[in-house]
Length: 474
Image 1 (cartoon, rainbow, N blue to C red):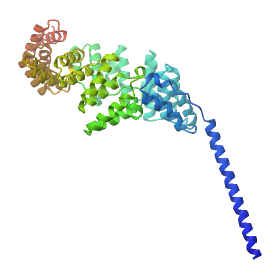
Image 2: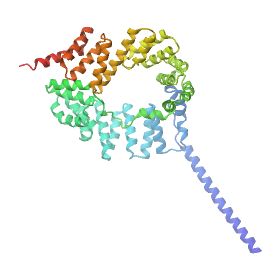
Image 3: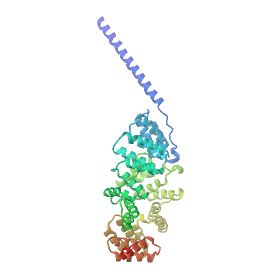
Image 4: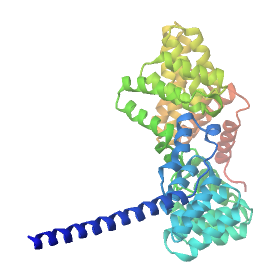
């Protein structure tokens, strides 16, 4: 029995010791955590209310409280959000701390260089980029040299820029383009030709490449070749990116604040969940009705979604606010207002709004919709005019995409329906010329000039056709 008591006492003593040790460790851990929390950097957030909608402002102000302790990841994530929303000074401060924690990270270095460049501290940005370029190889080094060259161009340092682009390597095509452009502008078009040949092999229809080839050919006295490249620009497709930043800030806006919520609404719209869109959008936009911290294009986007969701009354309120209260009319806003008014059985007001849109941006208007509205109003002449304009812009789009036969058919329909549109005749002439129908092209250009005698492009094309028929001078 005594032995049992002794054993029990020993066990209790051991348990007390273990508990005391555990409690001591817990106190130490808590003290360490509290100490780190108390010693973590207090971040003064930007003046969010002055520049952003109220939802984004709240999230931006609450963002530093998500992180209990200082860490490289904390500074990096804060910097990404601040940079995306345009607070580059705050982002630069955070990236400086992030680089202290991870000085070898190329992505942090690129982000900081971009912030410094946006702040006008180009020499500091290039110092960061030089460290990246000298420490690594491969694509990141090429990007660094390219950014250095672009920054040098901002400072009008052509020689330094050319050297940086050359360091990026012959296989870095944006740098190759910049080198060729500097040579052509520096009256060294012959030296640029080998670089242009390599560019054309990879990007034969890019408008920048075609414009550069035209300038080089003109500088070398090859005028017909230059004219051909200049013509091809109208049917070009952008394929060569020459943007310096190695990241896309615009896509990141859909991950934060009101941008994230609007992206979610767009997904609902794509899924044809119109009731959900109609319920959610007014709530979201009401977050933003604070005047000075409001971005008017948000109202336009919200109104457009609501029109698709058949919630015209709320859409009209948003459009009135954008156009009348905030004084931010756009062609799309006027067109949407016309749609809403027409649906509300106010045709005269609708036509007035659509007329504003037509004057501001005629190439983006839904002309078949206007043609149908004019026909319902009994105006057959105006209906034919809008159908002709629909064919005109469709033909122009086909022409830009180098689809000559569909362009020819659309423009012929437009000319037959309404022969009083000068641009229809010009683009029909362009299509005829590119199809090899010189006589028909000349007729179309002359019809254009008869309607608009000062149409410079039509006169230029007519002069070129006449020069081609005469042949080169003896």
